[in-house]
Image 1 (tube, protein in one colour):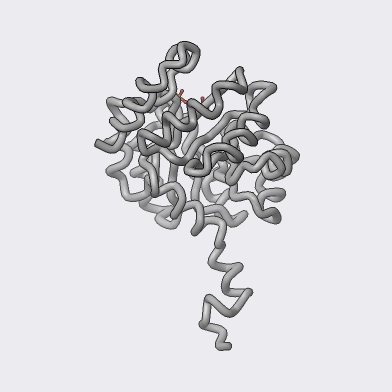
Image 2 (cartoon, protein in one colour):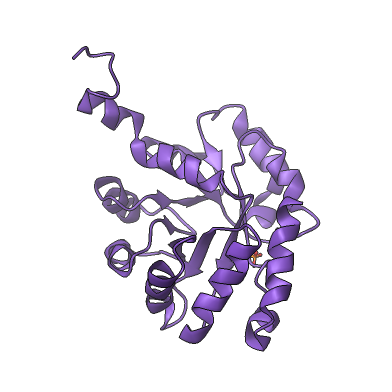
Length: 224
Ligand code: 3PG
């Protein structure tokens, strides 16, 4: 074993930050990360299947409703083509709950020191939320290279991401918040954007109406 061998040397493996490498790989598989808030457990599987049919296989279920963890569990168990994670992760204790439910990643609107510390020592990949260079640098110092720009549009949108890319080229982003069908492609053109998060691919009225084919069409349109 030589110190230069990243596969065999666990110290170097740790330095490479495997969690970030995996996240980059995962997020680049689909242009949009649907942000989903469900109130009814029975909608979980048909919604996930509708999005997967439209080619969006990474799903973010926000922890904003009492059924959210059960939704994650149900999708993890019954929709094997989907990679389901949790959004609105705001407290360190959420990470264990998400892992137990079968979630594969976590997304946060922010980057508190407690959340970063807990995620850095655990196995569940976290995408911390930032909206300033200092927050991005804090997250980077804690070992995170894939970040969520939130709320993307109010924070400065594409112009902000472009400006941050100069001094902080190691960071990649999943901008989320205020992005829709008219603007997401412009974000994806930026070198430091891996994917775009948004709720527009699963509109609440379509979910409530069980209009799964409309949701598949919206998902399909993101990579046509
Ligand atoms: C959220 O946390 O609700 C996400 O940022 C989704 O934002 P959007 O509804 O503007 O896509």
